[in-house]
Length: 69
Image (cartoon, rainbow, N blue to C red; front, top):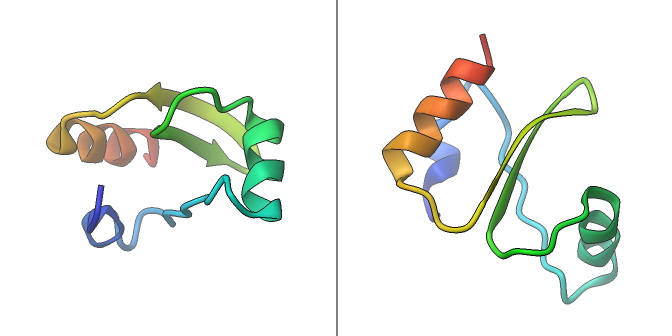
């Protein structure tokens, strides 16, 4: 989802994890990621929602905006 960072600028931070490196593997294990892509929305370190698979971009941005309220 290239450019999603621009779409949610000011309401959230998008981090991409590369499961080929050590930090990415730690995140995959910590959040139980089994599908690529997986979007996990965190608030104060707690998971608020998760979406697995390729979403419709507009729906994804709308869900992030709604969850940020």
